Amino acid sequence: MGAQTNAAPIIIKKKRVSGGDGHHGGAWKVAYADFVTAMMAFFMLMWLLNATTETQRKGLADYFSPAIPISPDSGGGDGAFGGNSVFSEETLVMDGKGATARFPTDARKARGTTGLDADGKGAKQDFSTLEAQLLGRTGESVVSDKLLKHIVTRVTDQGLIVELFDTEDQPLFESGTNKPTPVMRALALLIARASDLVTNPIAVEGHVSASPVVLAHDPAWDVSTSRAQSMRQMLQDKGVSPPRLDRVTGHADRKLHSDDPMAPRNNRIEVIFLRDP
Image (cartoon, rainbow, N blue to C red; front, side):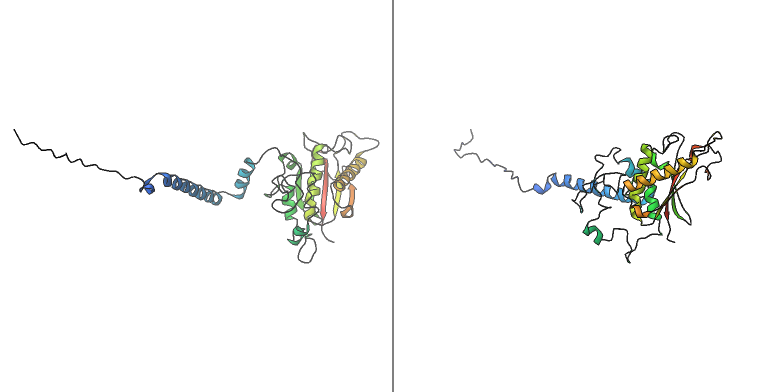
C-alpha cells in the first residue's frame, strides 16, 4: 500500500480573454468592399465616357429620360432651388408660366445669359446655336421625332431659313384652309421659344402645292398668304415681339420643292431669321 496524503489536488485554469481583438473582425471588410465597388464603378464610368461618342452618350441619356413629363411648367424662379428642373423650358417645348428665359431676373442678366455680346448688341449673324436648338442637337433641348420630321433648316444669303412642311401622313394645316393642326401649333411654339436666342428680324413665307385641275379662280395665292399670316399670328401669340416680324408673303404654287407639283412636300411655311442689311 502506498502512502496517502491529504494535500488538495492542483487545478490549472486557462482563462481566455476576449475584447482586445476587435480590429480582427469583419466590419472593415464590408466597408472596404463598398469602397472598391465604388471605385470600380467610377473607373468604368470614366472609361465609358472616353470610349463613346457624343451621339452615343446622347442616345444613352435619352434612353433613361422619362417619356412623359410630370409638368409642362417650371417654377419660374432662379437659382438651384428656384424652381428649375429637368422639365424646365430649356428641356421641353412648353407653353407654361415659367418664362425665366423670356423674363430673366437681374441675377441671370448679370451672368450675361440674355443673348447679348460684350457691346450690348445681339449676336445676330451666328445662327449655329439657334439651328442646333431647333433640330434637337443640344443636350438642353429635346425635340420630339414627331416634330423633327417636319423641320429642315439652311443658311443662305437671306439668313437662317427654317422650313416647316407637310408629310404624307401629317399636314400642318387643314386641307385648303389656314387652320393649323396641333403639330403646326407645336412647331410655332418651338420656333417662338428658340427665337429668343437671337434678335434678328423675321420673315414668314407661305407655299402650297399645285391644284390637280385648272380652276377659274386659283385659291393658291389666298391660301398661301393666309397660312403665312396664321403663322405670323401664332408667333406673336407665343411671345415674338411684333416689331421683329419684318414681312409676310404668299408664293402660291410658284416655288415648288418637289418635282411632283401636287406632292404634300410643297405645302410648307418658311420662317426666315434675316441677316443684317
